[in-house]
Image 1 (cartoon, rainbow, N blue to C red):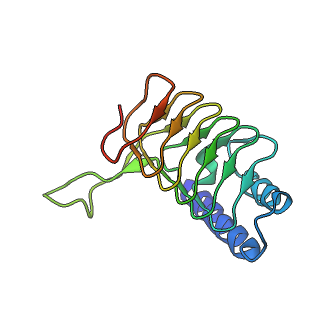
Image 2: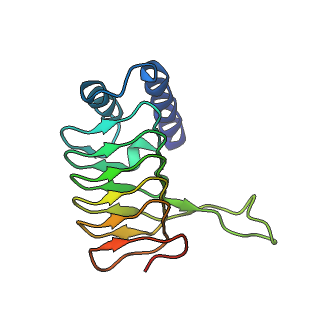
Amino acid sequence: MKSIKHNFILLYSWFIRLLLIWLPDQPLIMKIRGCLYGFFMEEVGRNFQVSANAIIRSLEKISVGHDVYIAPNSIISAGGGVVLESEVMLGFGSIIVAGNHTCVGGSYRFGPSELKKVHISFGTWIGANCTIVAGASIPGGCLIAANSVVVKPIKVSGIYGGSNKIN
């Protein structure tokens, strides 16, 4: 039964994207997108703005605070759960993935998924083309520089950047 609900929500998110992708990324239109996506989210705050080209999967496992912005070409795959606290901004092309593949018999192709929550705290800015992976948590007021990868929890607020493991 849970699989049917998940598939329905997946189809719903695809339909919202298809229906509104041709509209410009103006604040009112992005708020409408956010409101429509929010119907199936765990929690959604006011002024949730979603760009036309954003892809959001597993809505039922996402919690979003107030004044959250998701930029064009961002992807959220929330299999293990994603929390975006208030005033979080995702830059262009950012990816949040709350699950990892596991290796079985020397291959990652058919290994079971390892699902872990991703938590991004108040006021954090995720720069363009960043990747945040399962199990990562970012404290409030952080800036994750463009093209960075966060693979585990960050303990202290600050500015972080790099193409290898942060922290």
